[in-house]
Length: 431
Image: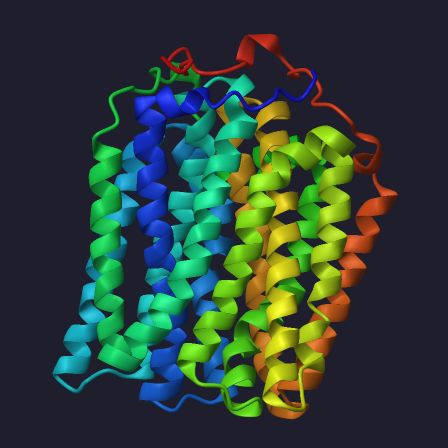
């Protein structure tokens, strides 16, 4: 199947626009939470590198459990209510942090608990979201839909971190998180307003056993020569990327002596790159083919991460290298993610999208947790800069391995493995 050219027809699809709006609002909130929890630990409590690493690990740890068991649960239920419930849970948890700060009882223990619970709800939301899109729009519009969702993720990456840095300096980190709670409530309201309902699940699907779900997801991914490399490189890259997640802020704030607002602006530069990558992803995919788009973009993104541990010297040089890493890393990273997501949604059976998405969450979550813990120990033992260099070189090695897989020769989307399993009866064409 040739890769469809974007038609812009999804601008007329009212329910997709509601999904898109929900994702846009929650994406801004997610950036505030991501930076806010780390800032609260470093600036409000004075956390060490190991404590920040543990915080990052707990935020990502739920991916392991959810990756094992949540996929089948989502495949046997309609996905939209799961997404709404996840938004509401995250809002309630985030409200508790400024309340604890107000009564002067905020501690690392509470931040650990909040990070774990928010991480669990976020993973559940992401799995359901990945499985829900093909049930809302037809296959011909998946690349366009993923591109639009990627664009708003990029816009959130531009404005979210900068907003987080400003809110942290204005309100302090705990109270900045209250803004995120509101964004999740707005997201839930948009999702509640979607009119199209998913098709009823088959009785056979409802009778699935939860302990078989991880096996079914793994077999489906392992037996697909196009999707398996995505799983392997995603897991490996997450491990080395976990080192960055644990040490980036502490490296920028303490080693490079940058202010929270400046760090927020630097991270926002990555959002500009992400926006460019998302805007050009469909064009680049059509031009070089879906497989080459994934492998080339992934390698360039990985190579750019080397700029971070090299940052030193005058302020302009330090900031320039960090900005370069953000722009090139995020732009080519998004240019790889969009066609990769479209490929998975296109070649895997829809009834297993929840379980296969959960497996990807399990792999990346396990990698990020190990990487974050490793990053904390390496940061304490070697220092943040050598630890970040190890993470960057490992990411490059994983991205280079993909060139040895069949993905490098994949030009067009293959046909569905089973035409009878194409999409939900309620998946709709824009009207």
